[in-house]
Length: 372
Ligand code: ASP
Image 1 (cartoon, helix red, strand yellow):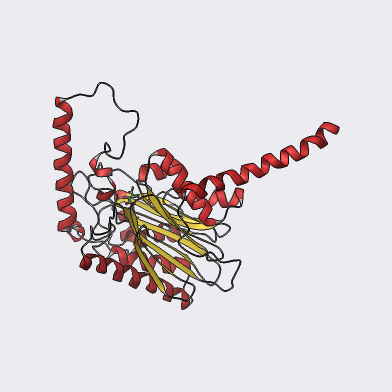
Image 2: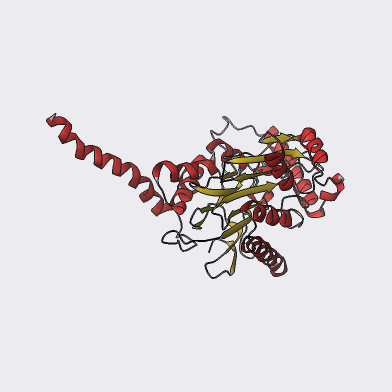
């Protein structure tokens, strides 16, 4: 009995350490939060945040005209989603509206402007999730769907399934009257040129490797050794959105063309619920972008939600722990946007930059690209 009483303070210290140490670890690694957090529930609160992909976006690597194009488009999209919420539309509507706009714009690696796979085809992935009831819809490997996010929503709302792929998904699109286009619609010269560049680099590397074989294969590829298709500059442009509507519901969605020169049939994290997308009214909504294989292995989006659910972590701390510690230590890169039920938003990325925009507490759009 006495021992039991003596053990209680020890147990309390251990439990406290369990909660505090990971947060303390983040404090050293993560950057200062970009967005000021709300102190508590502010009702009715609507919130909207989007991303246009993460990668090596060095200051000065974009021409001023190109940078302006991105900034203008991100501002236009974030305002359109926010306006929909102000008008009383749902968080799902706002997410779909914003993602469709980015899918239609060749600036982004989603819909028109998607990157090419190793076969020279555009293979599109997307998903959407409703935090109200955890319903979700996803599509992968589609070639003719103009707006994959709309098809993902149809899978969620009009079928008993969560995920549909390839020809079957397109057959379902036809049944549901979701717009299909010729494959040529997705072609953009710049993405085609990127594929040729990556293929050439791959050929050169193969020749080099055949000549001078390393004694033992490296345990884990470093960024310099990773296949060209996985290098950050060959894949940024994925799009995503997270919304909180005036009914208190959170939704999240993500859409992508994947990675340049990806193997035919490869599916990334964007259409995987829990990896690239997650939403739960009890915790948060998350949309990710980055090296998809790592996001899948780590279940990035769901992990952020779980840290909030099981460890009562604030949203920024949860996102930073997953991105700056778990993803970083695993050797992956990328970032997330996230929002909790009070409208607190979090942005976290370990890449050079991330195209992102949100609406601040005064209803003004804030657009950022670099790590500032
Ligand atoms: N996560 C995407 C994928 O792996 C790529 C990206 O976000 O840029 O397919």
